[in-house]
Image (cartoon, rainbow, N blue to C red):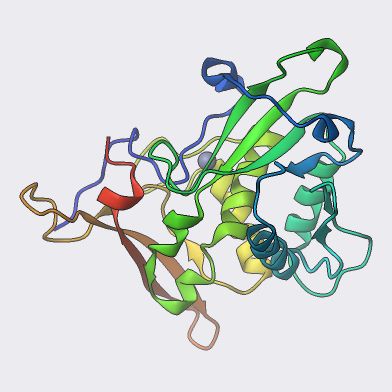
Length: 252
Ligand SMILES: [Zn+2]
């Protein structure tokens, strides 16, 4: 038997834009991040290999075949595409032409980040002359700890996580409040998954893996449901991802 975790225990935990100022963090941003014409920029210390992981996954989802991070760390997507999701292309295009500067930060192994999260940033100087900034925190280690059905893994990686946070930033969309719901934000991400013919996320909140609710276990495995449409029968097939929430976080 499984039970639903209360809303505070969220996956891809984030805060809607209206709440961002409750979580303002002071970050000294690189001068060139402020000067670049890009609106999605990696922090300078963001490793090249990890930028490449994000670019590869976003290229696959969006179909933007020339998408890359330039030498200043700014995301460029070009005009051409092949396959992929039109909704994902619209979201990326809106984000890179939007009012906000979105800074990607590698937050791997941070306890306060469960997969991904977006928080408000604050310029430490000359704020009046600079665009509003939000920080997309990405925990690569959390994603590396996820296991489960191959088809569900294809629908849940750093690329999908980044798009989820960009949807919060661009559309001010909300996450689910109740167990069993997907939520406004993931509804859009599921539309992208349908356009990419990958499994859809069936719920926003994870639940304890049956039998691991008891606190004497040192590991606390949780699971997250996905559904795969089977065109030949018109039926859905339930798929699962799981991970140890003691390591990934989100239990407090
Ligand atoms: Zn969210």
